[in-house]
View 1 (tube, rainbow, N blue to C red):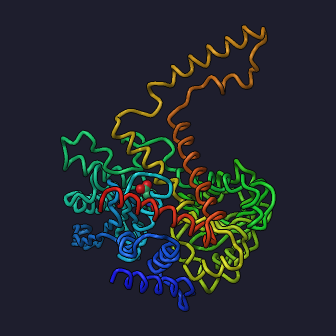
View 2: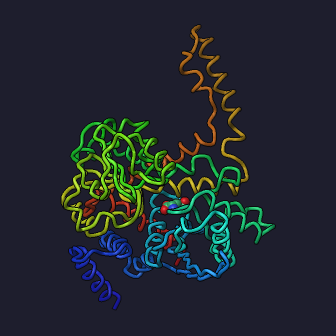
View 3: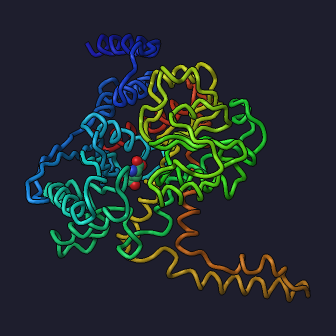
Length: 489
Ligand code: GLU
């Protein structure tokens, strides 16, 4: 009987493998199709694969808040994809079109992401169907606290069980409100700060969390460009220096990724796509200048010295070396994929390429650095923040000066032995002990390097692994399966 079931499942999987979607799959279907494509290559039981694929639970809450003299009803979700590790982890998104399918797909990506970069969390995600721009700050605080209250009382926010973080439409401010709400409801929980990450520094946050996802994208690209074989697969040559970049979305992730690549790696950001259009300048845009124009005017329109394009998405099709979709899911579809020329795409946002577009681009030879790896910098630094909150001490606080003193001794020894002064230009850097930010960057860099190296080893060495995405899914599913197996489930 089991043999027959296995055979049936294998046949279904083979059909799935050869199946190019004929209509554009939704975000959730895309994640499922990608999962199935990887699962075909794995020698684990169909039942276990299915257990890993499905989302464990989704809680929907409708709550009312009295605002502007009348009662307003809001709908929110918290989805738990997999509890093979607890707490489960994932952001809370505020956007008008948030829905259950989207939140579940994002929660699944969180499980895979955490497994791939060895962050010991299960996957979760939350969303509130709201346009944050419709409400002023006080109103938003009341709405956020009420949503948090609903989740906290069901342990869907809890340092040991479920730890949210920022996502689209939320940031440090909302995380501080959530942490405070939790503390009011758990006055004697000594680990209360660890109930949410992405908090401001003065509320138990960690240095480097805001820019962590963008920094992770930068580290991912640096690692990619350390491998000549991979660079050649994308049809590129050389280093990051001088590479022409188009970025979609100048929110927290896109802004930091593009700025770091421009300012620190010599890339030329020739195109920036935003909600209200796109900017193009072949000589390269200043990301900082565009962002400050956006902050001042609320739009990228009117930015001097660049060509404005009303239909911004057209810039996705502009020939460039690296395309960075850092905004919504489903922006590269079966419809526009044939017109996308970038040989290398790094998914800084979650799910920007549909499964149909993914298949088309893969067959054409485009190299895609997939979301579950590329944007894992955020949750990686969230992990560091959670550990910091549980240990109640800043990273490096005990050892920093001790480290400096030992370095000082070593330099003195070298100078005495050689009779020469240690070069001044190296001295200060060598003597300086690591700050929390240094340690966060080091941990993040190590995570991104290791993650890429593991994916590329599968990509190059394992039969049937055609691309980095499937390599990433495979590693993640294998790890989750091994976790279930050793837990005796
Ligand atoms: N929302 C981010 C993501 O999609 C961060 C999640 C977290 O830090 O828990 O990865």
